[in-house]
Image (tube, rainbow over all chains, first blue to last red; front, side, top):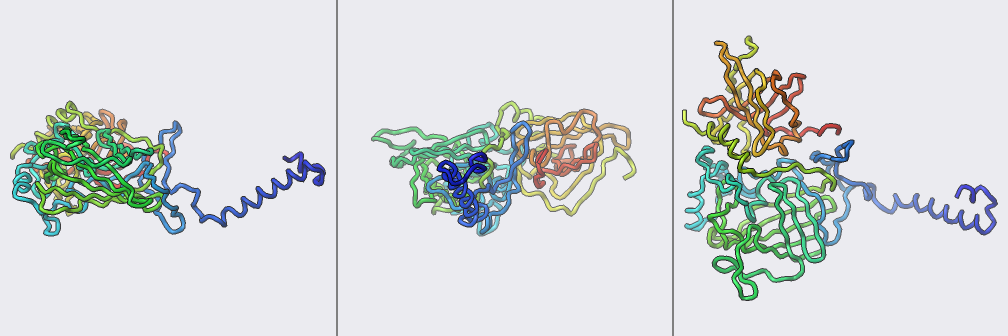
Length: 317
Length: 132
């Protein structure tokens, strides 16, 4: 290009090159005026890694009017983490919207059976916590947590992938994943012992049967049924119960490019007299290349921990 | 603190730590902090909790072995804990919240490494990873 421009500018080839150069220059000058600052920049932090293994960066810059970018249409794809930071999705004291702290506003509408179930659960967390040795949380045996408890247990970096038929979620804890079908299939009917599909009884599943539909271009509503029964799973780490009759409704609302709001309401007439909201968790977009350390339940490591620490901590004076 | 390897008990005004997974807070003497000076005997970087074992010599010359826990590696990494953070024989100062039954175990509130670096406890705010 330089050679062309340095030659006579009125010959045919030189004029074409000059025109292209001018268009490019003017375009580059106009582009920043046409789009807000930050449109092209990423709002998530980066950790430097000489070998290309960036670690999570939790001190994300705030989303402001200046750097905010619009949410893409019907797209939840990304690496998401609680906006409040790496402890923002812990929920050890109970689900986010109703922590189990004994306050009147956080009392749950138990059915008699639900209350009986709650009292049979000896949790290590919450207002009725017991010593580690008395704790009967199914998690202690590395049992799968099930839906919806995976949404309430140490939520950190969560990856979402999607295609034309489904959304897949990869949870951090125990490297678990689930599929939400978005191809229009029906939500199965809940029956005793599982769900009914095509007139057949189908088995309960750890992640149940999930279908999603777009309420608008930014909001996916997900319904899940057919989960594990109440003798296999808990709702949260404080021993609140959940049954296989539950219908879990989640909404994933892409507020803007960098923010995803994850809400959940449960309807479980076997255990609760009314539906109630369990969480509303804002998530922030992270560097998609972030390396995620494993956080798993290993029976051998759990056993070693219990011998060294848990059983000692539970001894009476 | 006169004795280099003494156990100093503080009944602090620290707020009890919020509830953390895995085993809960019922076993801990919330609000109390014990400061230990001793040498590292073992550092286990595993799930569900990392465990730091420290030999602490008392006034009578007897060594008491304390076990102090953190949360899991992936949770503690942002606070600066690494698999290589402790070596056997390192002299460290560890502040722990002890258990109620008086046995020498607790959960880490803070650790001062031989080079003076301080690592926070379970509730600590994340620090930037290396190189950031």
